[in-house]
Image (cartoon, rainbow, N blue to C red; front, side, top):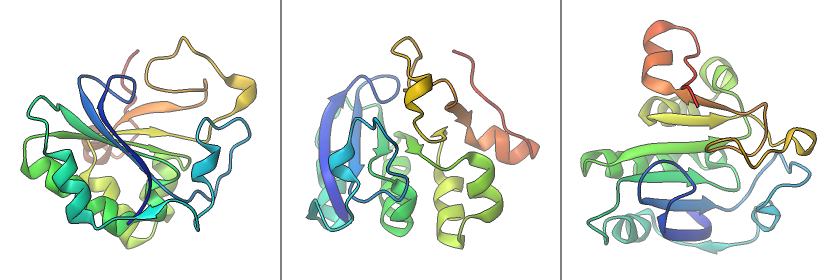
Length: 163
């Protein structure tokens, strides 16, 4: 797994105390991205998924896992394994992606679709500098949505969580 960084006890990447896993590599390269160093797929460091999972489970106060980046859906198999480990240990799973829920659901690869189905929440859409806002909970620009993934998949329509 290519990793840009790991953060214990994040309070900005979803509710509660979160373990945030920032993957390396992003095809979107959004202008103004706050993690531009994570774009190059050749950067970062290699870590075994099991090693990342061990870090995830170190803190008993952790409420959930957040997959961010870079682009987690560019490494769907490894992110899926980590998300499953989180769920098996009673943690919720949030993910940030430059792709939309609809794109991943309808046009994603089988591995991307499997990762999507493992998520509790997807913060979707590219970061748009012209819509940047520090007032939006859990997202950086006004076009991005906080999607309830299980409800969206069950209903066959996108269910956006209220602010």
